[in-house]
Length: 113
Length: 114
Image (cartoon, each protein chain N blue to C red):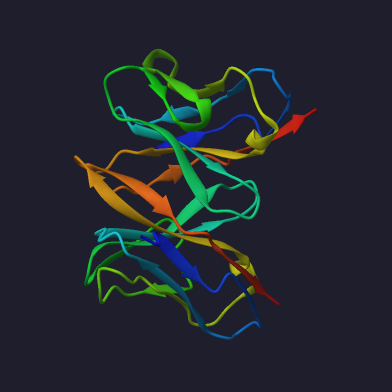
């Protein structure tokens, strides 16, 4: 079955430290991949997207993600986290043209002083 | 543009009651969808629409109805609410980018069924 998996349910990181969130996909064809962020009590905001081409994708708020076909991964990174980065992060994928997103279960990020 | 708006923000229902969650977008997006968010499960697609008059089921459609009479509106109806429908509901709309849709999400409706 086609799916997106986020292995880490919860990550704690110190402010100023680097952050990497893992996302693995299982699709027959190369999927279109997205990272969304959800702040407490808010809707989802698109951080970045991968459609094709360069495997390193830059997004908003200083985030980037790298698509690795050999590892079926699309990990999200940020070199130095800020307290405002505390949120839940979702990886999602699409393989059909109708845009039916499949979401991972999410990773909750806690930022400590 | 207001983007994607949802009403109400919060709702408490008793088992067996019916209600409609409203969703509207002012971006002239053809594609609209409804998701529910439950802890540890991410977001799951309930129903979606690729244009006025066209709807289809997603991953978890049971207990929900939708219709799309206009491009702007995509209401979600619960005909007989059940405690299992306690969740946060998100509406999204999409602008086509080539053949792929980037989805814009509303702020959500938190529904509790007692």
